[in-house]
Length: 102
Image 1 (tube, rainbow, N blue to C red):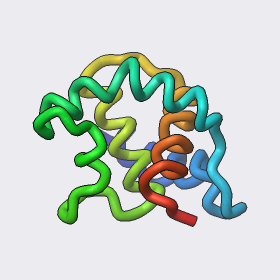
Image 2: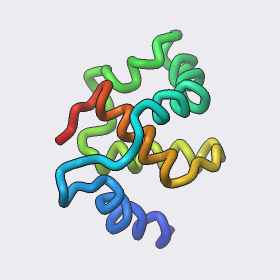
Image 3: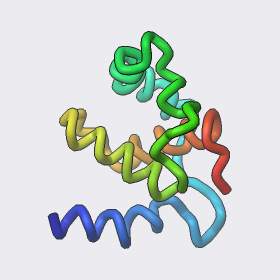
């Protein structure tokens, strides 16, 4: 549990590049990884529309850090073993396409 708190409070904001106002990652690669690793599960949970998890009124993610934490949570829960750079790529893709956090 201590490891999760350290990642959530220290590492994730740094990975998000918040201090510099940009996100690290390759959105094109993130889209490919998202389609391969995430989209089917999200579509299954939202009547075939994987985008609803991101666009619904009651979405969980409200910040860049929250988005990074959610992607990391899914990675850990589903044991997809994504590397940090792949997580950054997914976060960049999701932010560019859906969230538009600055």
